[in-house]
Image (cartoon, rainbow, N blue to C red; front, side, top):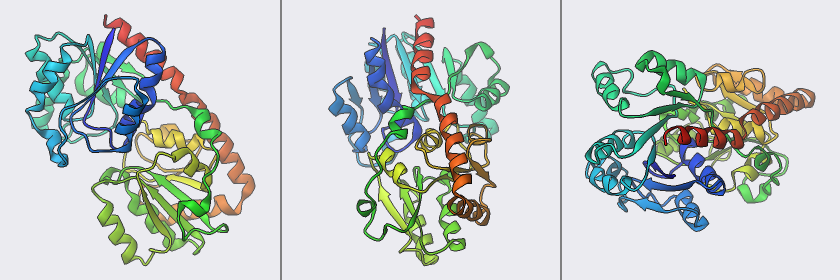
Amino acid sequence: MKILQIINSLGTGGAEKLLLDTIPLYRKEGIEMDVLLLWNNNHQFTQTLMDMNVCKVHILSESQNVRDIYNPLHILKMRSVMKNYSVVHVHLFPAQYFAVIANRLNARSSKLVFTEHNTSNNRISSRLLKIVDRLFYKDYSKLVCISEEIRQIYLDYLGSPEKLALIPNGIDVEKYNSAAAADRKNIHEDISVGDTIIIQVSAFRPQKDQDTVIKSLTHLPEEFKLVLVGDGERKNLLVELVEKLGLQHRVFFLGQRMDIPQLLKASDAVVLSSHYEGLSLASVEGMASGRPFVASDVPGLHDVVVEAGVLFTQGNSEQLAAILSRLIADPEYSAEVREKCYQRAREFGIEKLISRHIDLYNQLQ
């Protein structure tokens, strides 16, 4: 069985990180699996996967322009690669549409699988795009939903329950739980031993709402410092917000990092302030790290975090600050949250993900 994973690029994001973590494990299980990227954005994930030497990495464009992802000429290149694989597993838009057209040009020679990673997208909310969307979804043999919430949304949206497969995302829980904490001196020169470190790991996209966690510092003592890991289109806006609030000495942008487990372990609390999620790997990683995890009470986070981590009303920076303050001031409460978070994270072990996907691929043979 030859399987091709198609994704726009290996930039920051849960879907991208999932491929990096799982492809070596599929290979250990005897699954021949390769990757096709529409665009090479020179991200560390891409180079790391290449350095592993566990699969072929097909890159359609070396352009430095992110808009090149949407180049329809990719379809012809995809067609040439896809014909060599019996199953093609697609992630994200526009790869989602391009793969369907390429497969039609190949007389539908490959079985198509698509993973829906979010509870919301612009196409669902548009009457016109909804019609187009449904036409493309018809070509997929299976639609993988990473949460029950997403499954229900697409059951209502598309019908066809036989096409829907519920397979939650997963991580290597012990990798995060047993990681050695990064030396605080090496995180940033303006962080001292006595500071309280809050961390958020997420791409700088509108969905992720780093604004709220930045604003929460205005309600917290000076020793509270915020570390933001990631990159993306909103970075300059976030830098401007930090400057406007006079928080340059308390908010630190670390960029893309490969030592996420060590950074999480060095923090005092992990936050994910989002408008919505699918099943956020960052949330599971945060809970697995052994640090108290705090998240916005939104679709895709509520079900994962409730009764384990602590939820706050999306956009409420003052409430978030109060939660963080209590976690630091009350060691017993913090320990209770940490233990519940770890136990919840164990429900999302990567082994279950691998097994369920292999079963799915076998059904398509």
